[in-house]
Length: 319
Ligand code: UDP
Ligand code: MG
Image 1 (tube, protein in one colour):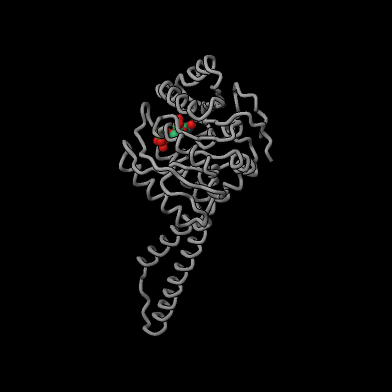
Image 2: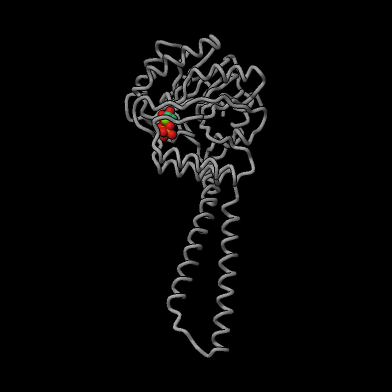
């Protein structure tokens, strides 16, 4: 199981997508925190196809500081996959996942390490407040976490991102979950073990713009739901039953009308409405089923999750 030789105490994994302005302060604060934990740490930056000078900055840092490692993916694969690449290659006994934009305060890592020492394998960071994010983002995020909680059987913590500390054990188990549509916070919750949290106020993004526009957020939310719940399929069946029942009543009514009252209504409007209604339900249902099939399809193709163009980490074939 433990296929990595762990000579490193702490790995900090940071996915990077167009974060050139954030890198200097991020590096400074992470280094300061890591040094307080151990001298034996590594900072693993995953460049997820940035279009700015992020990669260049990372390479420069790695030349002056032997704690700095970079993994340059061959293109933009998305946040979850970038983090997965970091998890595959990092070597720490404790692993921290953190965003690059300084929305997650690096100083919180110290509290997480304390909890880990108390025996918790997973310490996630729970957001009390989110500063500087749009009303829309906060509301949709809140709604999503609550819906997810209601329709899944596992306990995915509410109002947390991927900012967390996990034990090597958890990392190794995550590597055994080869699914293509990653939803790491759900997978980690699914694993169990001793999990706890520390609370924090989420800061504003320091520089740059979000790499998570609405379309990506929706895709991510759907991944979370389809990975951990069959509830949408159940809803489809229930809707089908409800519609069929109404249709059945309408049939009775029509037959009754035809025979007893001898009146044949033109019925154009009701016909149109019911056809469209059923059509709508059918389309939604096919779409939902399609989402699940697409998951199966992706996993059957068994493509590599990501491709590495260049890295200064040796541990390349750990997966
Ligand atoms: N990120 C990434 N690939 C992407 C989008 C984002 O690696 O395609 C990184 C980004 O650099 C940051 C983290 O993922 O470190 C979170 O992204 P962001 O801050 O843009 O998301 P938000 O906080 O707005 O949800
Ligand atoms: Mg952010």
